[in-house]
Length: 162
Image (tube, rainbow, N blue to C red; front, side, top):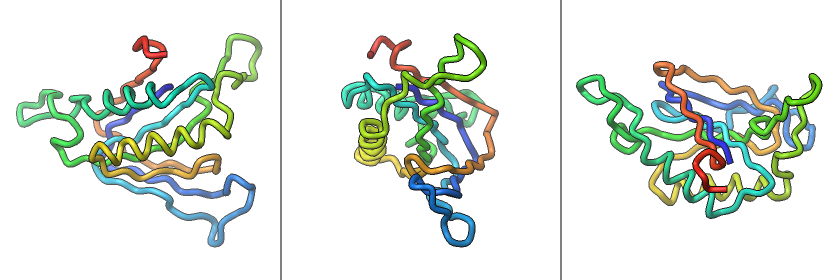
């Protein structure tokens, strides 16, 4: 599992094409919008489990990457009243080792990845986070204002959790 966590002043996600290929009326709609907090791209592999998701959510929740009154990155999401925008992104599992067209064989299949994405969102909410999401499988436009910029990549393989 991979989380690309960006500290943002604000972020939103607009659905411009539904997962079934239909175009929403009016050219799209905002499915999620947050103020200060984390905009998180979530990549799910075929071998990911709820246990891994639990560890990833807990690690993200505790990251002290917001500045305190002295300019030190010492505050977590709760300390700043931050929100979370989760957007599923299977392309985080792109394999570009061969040729010029990425392979996505390591990304979780939608039948497994969508419930896992929903589990992650629910787990964040249960931990007290204010959460908005994109729409799984939809074509979306993500807008954000980075703060810093400050970006962290959490990878369950690198953490030894896979």
